[in-house]
Amino acid sequence: MPLVKLDADDLTNIFQELEKNCAVHQPVFDSSGQIIDCLLLAWNSFFADKRNYEVRHGQSMVEFYADPDEALKVVNKVWIEGSAQQEFNPSQTRSNNHYCGSENYVVEVFWQKIAGHIVELSGPHSSAHQSVDAKLEVIEIEHDTETRAQLSDERNRISRDLHDSVIQQIYAATIGLKRSISSIQDLSTKENIEKVIQMLGDVIVSIREEVMGISEGPIDDIENEVRKIAKIYTGNSDLAVFVTCEGELHIPSGVAAHVRLVLKEATSNAVRHGKASRIDVSFEKNNEQFSMKFTDNGIGFGNTPKAGNGLENMKFRAQSLGGSMNVLNHNLGTTLNWAVPSNNMNWRE
Amino acid sequence: MTTEKIGIVICDDHELVRESLSLYLSEVPGFEVLGTAHNGEVLLELLKSTRPDIVLLDVQLVDESGLDILRSVREFNASQAVIMLTTFKSDSVLVDAYESGAAAYLLKSAHLDEMLLTIRNVAKGERPFDSGEVLHAMKRLDETGLNLIKTLDETDRSILRELAKGSSDQHIAAVVFLSVQTVRNRVSRLLRRFGRDNRTQVAVFLAALPEGTL
Image: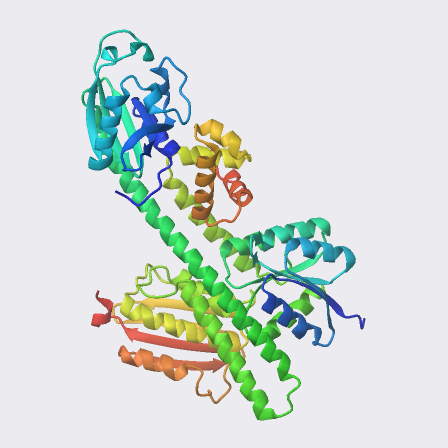
């Protein structure tokens, strides 16, 4: 049974197209767990048309059904076993004026328990339950998928909310530190506090990354990936991002992890140290190699690239895959070429 | 050159953030914090008595959307400059903030200098939105919407057709033969799947679709 709270109206709506009687009931239990009545939750027009009385929400089965004892027996069976079939002749019940039409006919009723509801379907066709069976299966699968999607939505929302408040607190702490810095005379203390602010900033970025779901897996939409990463590092909206890629590009997860981290380092360098307002990233893959060219219009590193800006790290990542990296400072900014062989096993998965 | 200070009002439901921002900004030369608010109602009251150059407004307050507050502020004073502050960027919020007349959209980050710069620029009358980013966000939202429509059943399509016309939930319920509550559930499920926060955005998107798409 899928983990869903089915909406009775939804069910009726789905069954409407079956052109059969359909009703959804809410069971009423006694203290021993026995079903002693069922209340009508939803029904379709065929169900209402067949009846001589006015069908209303919450109507009791005991009060309105022609043979309530038999109906409750079936319902209890359905509750335990999941489904049941019943043959029913309206003309042989206590009050046949319950139903329209006076001819003597047998109705086949198919009962099913769906997510806490009792669903009743009936029609004069003997094959009714087969189509219904198939239909129910489809509904269960659909609702199951939907519920899973909803659960995951919900989980994401909660995670976002939780992280939101954590980020707010760190943000507030950062502001507090920033505020106190102006009154500090000692230069090394000042520097230390700046470092702490930077660290807290990195914590915020990491949490944001985590929540925004930049993580594992292969890359199929490289442009989207670059933009997602750029979004993390741009506090303000003024970084223009241009991505070019020759043909379809699928980067398997083994290489994708490195590509993401290199993109992050490069973007972070461009924005934080280079004060760039634009990045151009291009990708190319041929039989020999996969290459990534990252250009920004920032102020660059000057002639002596400082350690700790991640360049060594990016280089090491390329080398670990048998590739290489070079950095070029030019008057328009910085260009980084990162390339790895495309014929080794990292590209097969 | 005027020596007048840039007057700022802060609206954020997170007390720590509100207080530390207020203390920090009031110590920045050339800035003056005129007041703080923890919700939209207090903010609007504050705007009646003060005339700030800038309103710093959190996007997501408890039980209240900063975007709704933004719209009421702009309704109260169409020329009020508002800078939206957010912990997470999202396409729909970016587009909504832009269309609702925000002056800028800032991430809460440790780069406080950026915030100071943005405040100064907005006070000068600039609107530092990256039009490229807004366009991209719009494009992504539209793609999501078009892909989604392909997968919808007839009931959901009927609901969308009514949404595009601006129908009420009651009216939609009557058209698709479902209860109002079911319609509400379905509408919010659809909005979530469209990645949009409010039905007006979806209605505008749907109304712009070529005839026969739905």
